[in-house]
Length: 174
Image (cartoon, rainbow, N blue to C red; front, side, top):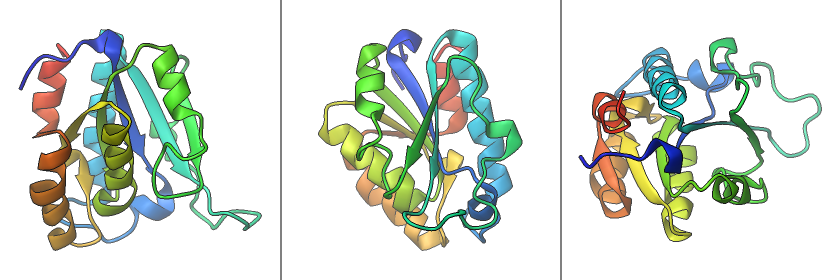
């Protein structure tokens, strides 16, 4: 895998909220995905890359369903971008694209839950609007293994670079 320029890269973490992390996922458990996403975020921060923490809010319900809060260990830190989305992907009417372009970001490393919903939609739109997309397949998981594997093997390989978390961290220089 080619090196990633941390000054032009964002690690985008999708929907690491209690009610989503606790879903039965495959091939990786929610806690395993969180652990790998945290490793990506730490490597990003250590090398000067941007970290984007995305959470979903359902349109309408007030309050949001129980468990809608981010896991405490995933909460954005100073310098991170915090994005609230109301659709599957992180770009629609969130200001994410403008915030990334303002920082000079042209590469996205995307992880989170679930593979074939929020992660895939964010990757599809990101690629469509001109970002280089990197997808560490072990830093995401589907609602079932087939859905995850189909997205990774069929869709993601057409959108960008599929790799492991360790390969993405190494490419960042971490």
